[in-house]
Length: 167
Image (tube, rainbow, N blue to C red; front, side, top):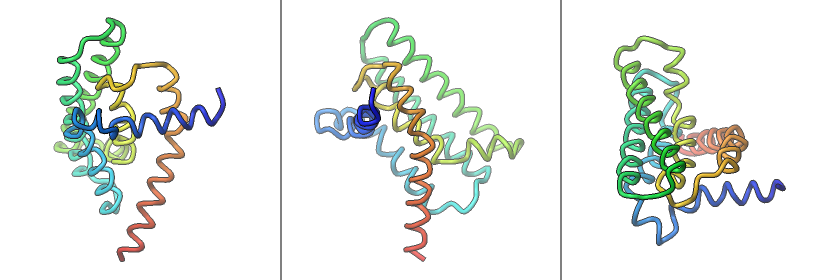
């Protein structure tokens, strides 16, 4: 598979929820992720326990939204099992993150789980897979991981640029 194929598959993951036929089904779940990513990059100076709580609620929102879609959708047993497993893991991480944020117990974990760039990237790209807009394939997971660091860097730089322009 060429880099172009990887790039086009990544674009498909990002763009699919915004197709007119798909957007009606998922707008309530995908738009809060983009808004959180945008606001998080514009207004945060450093990660805090409050950021962890906010990210926990965003992950919880996405996980519960995925659960609703999965409960309505029938698919192959393997695909449904994987989708439910991802949903349960996201909800568990969300609850864990919220608890850490409220308890103010672990600054190290908070600094990882409090980054909107980190959580929103994965939630946004897993969204079309979890809501069955696209089929789960190993290739897509590899693509999500390959483009993670470059995407985070681009999001960070765009956020810095926008903050500089606003000031």
